[in-house]
Amino acid sequence: MPKAGYKALLLIGNNDAGAEWKLSASVGNKIVLLYFYPKDFTGCCAKQACSLRDNMGDLSEENVEVVGVSFDSVDSHKKFAPNTI
Image (cartoon, rainbow, N blue to C red; front, side, top):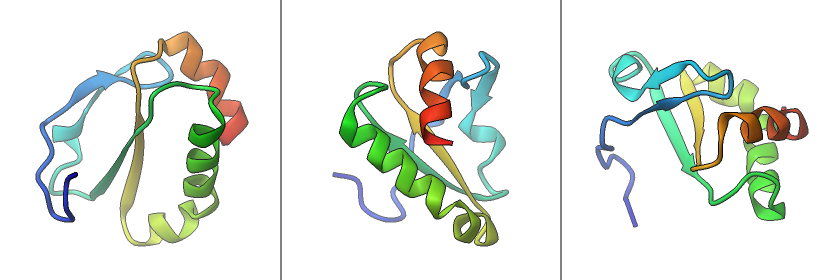
């Protein structure tokens, strides 16, 4: 289990719009909160994402970027996002 302050690998992936996203672009500019989840549309994952969404104002004020990470497809993320945003 990673601990606070653990340095993450410089991940590269696609966002829910299919555009490339690189962790390295945010390093040093903001705090990046990575949350990993197994699959879109699972109850636990939706609750976790909604909890983060509900606290996004406070997180944004603290310069925190929230990034959810899973192995689902871009199409799956597009369908899942309206359930959590």
